[in-house]
Amino acid sequence: MQRLLYKDKALIGLDISTSDIKVMAINNKKDVIGYGAIDISNEKFHKSLEENDDYLLLQLKKLFSEKIHGHLPSPQVAVSIPTSQTYSRTFSVPASTKKNLREAIELEISQYIPIPVTSLYVDYEIISESEENINVLVSAAPRLLIDKIVDACSRVNLTVNLVEPGINSIARLLRDIEEGDLPTVIVDISSTATDVAILEKGIIRVTGSTAVGGNTFTLDISKKLNIPLEKSHQLKVIHGLNPGSRQESITQALNPSLKKISLEIRRVMRYYEERIKGIKVEQLIIVGGGSNIPGIGEFFTNNLVIPARVASPWQSLNFGKLPQPAKQLKPRYITVAGIASLTKEEIFK
Image (spheres, rainbow, N blue to C red):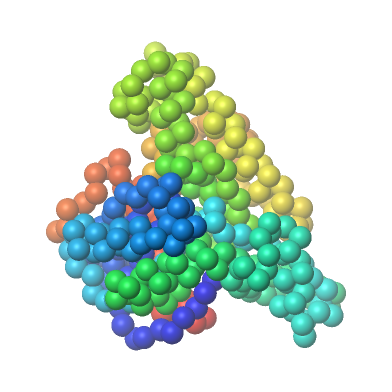
């Protein structure tokens, strides 16, 4: 996405989503030496972008002053932003446009991104080229969002080195430990949304998103069974979709929302398979704070007829003597762990 001045100091990861902000520092041995998180209001986050208030700034200050376990070795940060606020696509342009490639790309993205190109930061990478076509991977994000985040970071004395979609950060963590060489659907279920991406040969090829998340599931169960939200959450994470006396009622409650996610997965897979001829998606990996529903892997396996499982990347990270996040909260740190794993070489490759 946006590449800014890089100073040769340790890099820490900062993940800014619409429901929380996380930070993490990882050393060369893959040890977590510092981390923290703070919940934020989805409504106030979006309002701060529109009205230019200091909500994001104040939450960053609170995170770094009150919520850190361990230590953070540097003010140099790489930032991941909500995937739902970004656009990533793979497409082809005629080889004859190479001398004016950026103009050709901007013309192409104007056809599928509902924001004027002048209001976007656009980055692209040539994946392959032939005598006829150039295959390009393009990412774009609103200038307003990026500028707001960079400004807030600078006001708490952080220097932003790179900004990327959160799903790219997740892919970085998964590609080495979850058979990332296979064409893979990544399904990232956060509290408020679900992001979907295709990972092939270590590269995110296309992304999509739907406004269904872990909070949606809790509300679904609460409404269907007429029970308080706290009890609904307990049923979700303890029983979920697994066989048992609760399975039928919980499945009925969650089925509409899970089918909305399946519909978005199919849409993203169709886009990918129509443009990357001869390559089929071979697995589906579920991540994120909303993935802690027993039996959710089996649901997508049966619904989409593709092997699906919940990722378990934590064996590659060692928290050492730091207090570890509670088991049910660990999935929320996968994105920040991915951006914290970024190397200097990857920034300027």
